[in-house]
Amino acid sequence: MRLAAAAAAAALVLAAASLPAAPASAAAAEPPPGPPWASPLAADHPLAGTFWSTATGERLSPEQVVDRAVDSRVLLLGERHDNADHHALQAWLTRSVIAAGRRPAVVYEMMETDEQPRIDAWRRSDPPPADAAGLGDALDWETSGWPAWSLYAPMAEAALTAGLPILAGNLPLETVRSLARQGAGSLPPDLAERLVLAADDAPEVQEGLIADVRAGHCDLMPDAMLAPMALVQRGRDAMMAAVVVEGLADPATDMAILIAGNGHVREDRGVPLRLEALEVPRDHMLTVGPLEVRDGAVAITDYLPPDSLPPYDIVWFSPRADDVDHCAALRERMKNKNH
Image 1 (cartoon, one colour):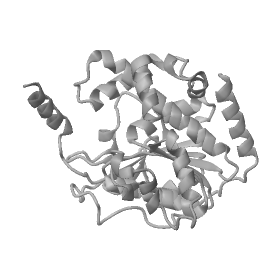
Image 2 (cartoon, one colour):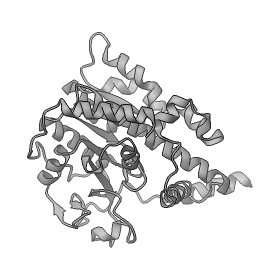
Image 3 (cartoon, one colour):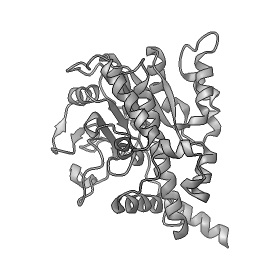
Image 4 (cartoon, one colour):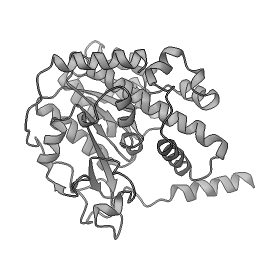
């Protein structure tokens, strides 16, 4: 394994050895999200608000979910970015593990690593921030392209109140551009080493990443761009994994929580795979994928790939934020643009 990855893993082991064991059990400190829902569609669906284990197919109680989250060392919480109920789930689990005595670093996909000095400066402001509302202003969130800061603030609020790290997890935009245009060789050697980008992915991982890129761009991206953009996805996941390991090594913490899109937290080709490359054992992680219900789909098998391992340990179902076909809208804009 490369030197930087080995050093990070060693720091993780030392941090783990110096910290007390997690509580064996923890009841949910507050109820999970439920009616009235923020998302307006299919609120009466029979799966809405339920948790399921993908390994056993069994329905889980909120208390069982919190217990599993408390027992993890890395908790990866997915989302559909514009579904407010998914953010409410992330906030509930973040608060619940802290209430149970765990001390997580909270890592955000939505913040780029070169923004970390701004986060740290905001925390050092005089007087100290009383809540997380001002962090959005410190990061110029309104111009970031992400949904409203009010959706993401509760997880930062929980970390701020408990005196825990808030970490930017994503690659800076300029690094993303270099990866897409010039490949991994364009990165500074220390960053490439930290991200373990020299090793090749298994063919099925690379194929999955390319399929994700193709679908995410509505089958409109030129074929020549698919592999470079898959490398960008891999680089982003690797950066988040490296920051998670950094958070684990902080003496103030005993776990890390990642707030990211569902595609990033999936186990087969997302951040968990990159964490394993940094020698974080798979059984130290728990992945939770919030999924929107579909009309007529009332079994969890309707939502999981039939020919591969489930992408998440636990799935949670919410109503739908909308029924907009974003790809149809994009194709229409492209057609009008070309005429």
